[in-house]
Image (cartoon, rainbow, N blue to C red; front, side):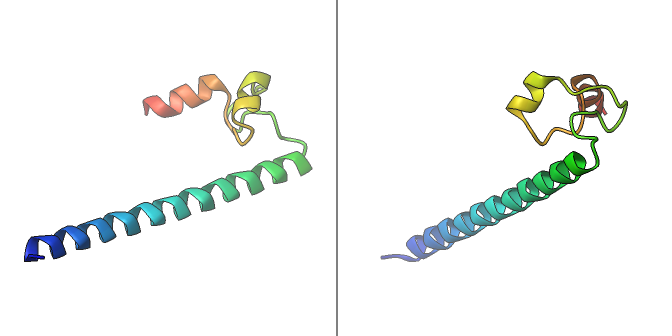
Length: 80
C-alpha cells in the first residue's frame, strides 16, 4: 500500500465524519421543529402562519407538519 492509499483512507474518513455530523445536525433541527410545533399546538396557534396569521393549508401540513409559514410567506422568504 502506498502513501496515496493512506490519503484516500483519510479523505474517506473525513467525508464519513462530516456526513455523520450533518445527519446529527439535521436530526437536532427536526427535533427542535417538532418541539416548536407541539408548543404551537398547546398555544392554539398550530396551523396558522407565523408571519401573516393566515391558515396554513391542510395539504401543506400533511406533507410538512412542522410548517410555520403559509405557502405565500414561505415563497417570499425563499426569494429573500
